[in-house]
Length: 305
Length: 215
Image (cartoon, rainbow over all chains, first blue to last red; front, side, top):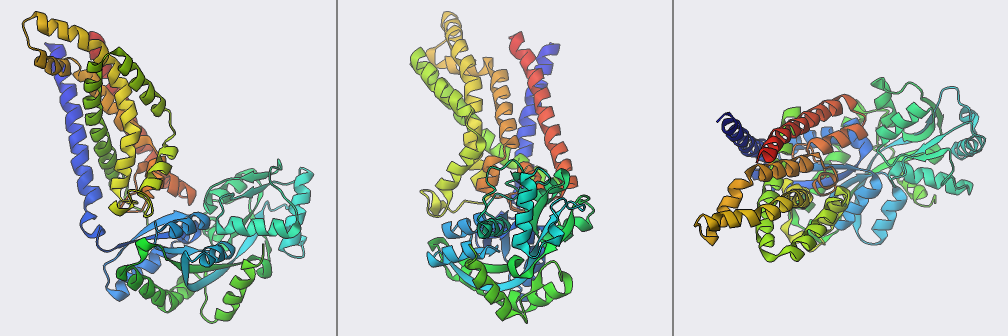
């Protein structure tokens, strides 16, 4: 009798839990369903913009200004994957910073550039005692050469993103300029993760890495990086340019997507520039006022490797 | 600027219970149907599903993406990066687990239940009903297993669901994404919730297991 009671109790509990979980979850997870199908747009972005919080600020202000009730579904990936999603048409709008990859996709007619909206720079960070003497290097290329030599001597380690993100693409271009290949060396570690994760990894290993200045300062201000210092800046080789792209895939070829994309571009190039200037100066700088400089930088970066 | 723990947890429960429920129903139908066909076929089908249990969820996620992306065969459905995509993908994650757990018991129980029913003057068509009643604890265990596998998998949820905040973010993707942007504290809370859920499932399995032995 007791067993039968226990037995039925367990069965009832499981069924109730399953059904309740389903319905409550449906209510919570599905309450946006109604508006989703009609006016949502998938946006792929580089992790850095997502992490710093710029994208959310953009979208909130955009909705406030235009009074459009649009849901932006944000996929935070590396630039390489973000661009791939654009060319597939899985995402329609993309925020990326990998000029050489962007040009490849543009030449294939898969994506269209809407605007270059901001820039900051990559910096080489590493342990404060700087075993590779990176801070004494004449430029970024020389700094990488020093890291390579120190690595070969067993004095330094380097953590690479290894995920074809904008940062990773730039790093590979620098190795290429040096005609050195760190691939497979014991001191050269690939994280395959986002920028924040890679910085934390470099911090734990007391290693060097290349990072965009925004992600670095963002984590530094949260007190999460104790073994990393900003060692080398080089505006010529390490300028980092952020641009917005629109996918040309058939799935994005509709009035609504185009309308939103061009509206978004107009916003980002006007009020969005002021937002960057007021709120994110130093993390990501507005392109406004330096249009020719960023355009030139973008062009030269596509030729870099 | 992150989602509340509650809404992520709820979405996780919804998505994984939906997919495991569907997988569960399909597994019951399939196992009851297959066991009527003789030992050979049972062995073969079971072998196939046992092999599928070991397929990494990231591989399933990639296949689901290739099916659902706009240029893929199921592209016109337009469900990539929606909760339905995760439900669709996790169905394939949960099904082999539920099926392989079930089939052995259904196969071994069918013969003696059939003999019992027929010798007591029952009809052939009553066998299935009795079998269902006999195997309830096994079936529930297999549902719970399927559920815990679905709620704990990351591959499908990340590749086909995308972890979109407020829409397709489930516990595992939230942990992965928040960790990758350095938000460890939040990720730890999510991890604790996930552990609690799976522990609760294991406990229910233990209780159910005693009844299976008692049978």
